[in-house]
Length: 345
Image (cartoon, rainbow, N blue to C red; front, side, top):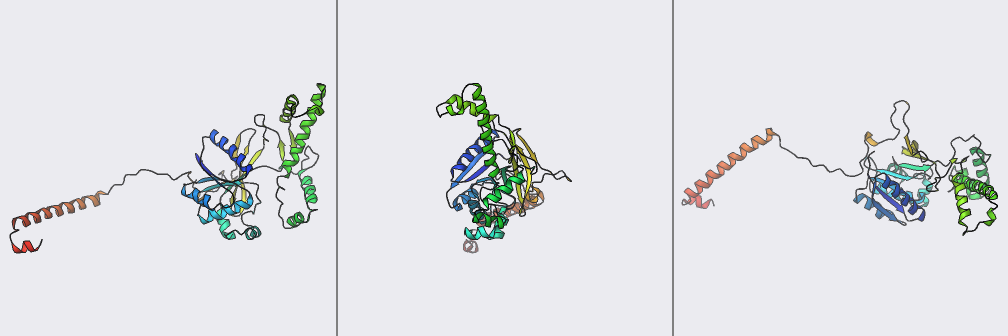
């Protein structure tokens, strides 16, 4: 969309500090400038107002869901939504995080449900695909996604507070990320298992490892980089350059009160794909009035001219007025001895 300037509003939490560091690196690679950074602890009122004063248009928000509701209310109060603004939020909030009346009441949000829905319209979310899309396929652990979810719900429902949340069709915090943790344990186990096998060929074992034994640590790291399997969260693999999990990122947009998947990003192949309408071939992304927002206020120099049909008559009238004025000056000077002229001064 040819955006080269973005702004960031961030909750003062360590996890978001590291996220912002990664965002800055990626933005620099793409020649995108982060022109405005706003960080807050509890109350986002002042920082949202600052964003508006500094003409922020494309804005990335980094905060937890509870804080996101406060920010969204301030977005409504400052009218920072609609055709001029694009907001990006974290994608692992619940689908109704912005309009759940229970949350709004318990947290003392000063905006109504209708106002929150209005302010949230059109925002985007990004998140790693945390659940394998093929729910019936058996994964490396021997379980399908459906079997894993059923077992997880049964285990968590043993606690009363979680059981009540499930009965209300709500998911406890961390539930959606459970496949990532589950597959992470499997990845560590597989890496250690292959490391143990390799060390045996060197007449060593994992028992000989300590924090000063760099040789064994390098072997474990090398084996971890080679880990590849089909897990509950999808295909599991790690970047050799950074050690980060390589996964698909899903981009969604809120249209009315429902999230619509509008694109995917594959980190392994660096491929960005936008979903399109099968009938028209157009992207599923919705822009108000079909116009993509600008990343700043565009200032253009424009010479204004007066139409000749107005200019010429005004020149004629002006010339006549000047001539009449000169005639009156001459008359005043020539007959200034007359009493009537003197009294007219």
